[in-house]
View 1: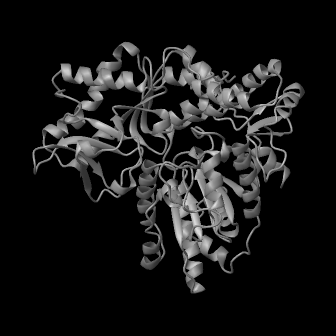
View 2: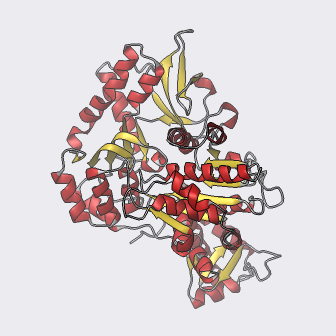
View 3: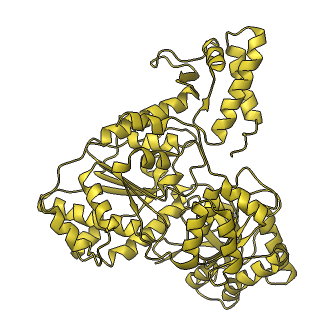
Length: 548
């Protein structure tokens, strides 16, 4: 049910370039140009390749631009009935081979059962999925732990690390451990979860101290080279770590995952965490979904939610099962955790939600209190542009707050303006997704943007002119919200159907809310979104399945 991708100026430019260099006769060049435009536009929509019929295969092969010898690549490659740009075929093929090399189990450690029993106490006859996931991860070089919110993925990984460190200690070995996430915001939230989970461990303080690992972004872990697609670490210069754990793996695209796995040193352990039902990466591929579906013997899904309960949990399950009528009835008839918002009440309702944090600013409260109050509520929009998009909602809120004299709009910067960083700036320890609030500096009386430290222990302030790219964030896109949680969320859907709407998008929005969820939509838009499932074209699943 996916809409066909639109042809952009970039698609047209790339097809024109290859059109000019093809060996086809004039009457066939136009057909070839259309085929490449289609391939380019599908790539922009997250597909790795496109399916082509026999006539299209012959057309592509006749162009003189299809790779015959992998050591001498040309721009295109045909594999079975799929047409790729060579680069994306290379990433897909390379990743499949890389994962295959990681699949061999390692020997079971002596005393592992005793250690597992000491960290995982089973209180019922049900399967302890966390314990099962831990055993898989410890006894395999590659494993995936998936599950919805509140199922204990971080708790499980902290216990896995404690067990591995205890085993290493008995052998007088030193383990180097890295933990990463796709975005700075996801890394910060992971840090908070690790700190909380460590407190419940029954191990020695020495082991707890060794788990005091600061998560980083995947790009920073690999050593990003500014303005290039290359990294410092690769197969020739691998990472030094013995264990690498990556959270929010559903957000990682094909190219980045291939480069990440390429950088692993021999005999290292690689563990992926994520919710397979969330949105796929913005760039090409559905890597986590392909891996979990193709490698069930290396995947454990945590099924019991310890934190995510009640109506929101039930609602997320129904949405995930693509049952729009049942989901809509839950929305209409629930009033405790879930409810519908009429669009005509939108602005008044939203302003009421944001007044508490602005009152904290007027009281001259500490930043920690201001930020935690702001973070209790978040608007999530399906689209960025157009009516009910991120930009539209942010503008409406600012204007209403100013009209009611709650904020003073004297320019771009004003006291109380919440912003989200949209560009990584490692030297300033600012990353895409970081949220700060503009306040008056008590020491200088000038405006500065304040950011919380990941563990909440301190605050960082940055002058406005030093900030990397950023935007106002009363409302953010659902895509940008991945890796975050909020007490109370308002999810606003557009008034007309958009190609971006899908059941994965709605599910992701729902699972950002911890205690209360409100949705603004019509049944027509909501039901169409739920009936649309993201399906991307690629060969990774097939290659993994055929090779195992």
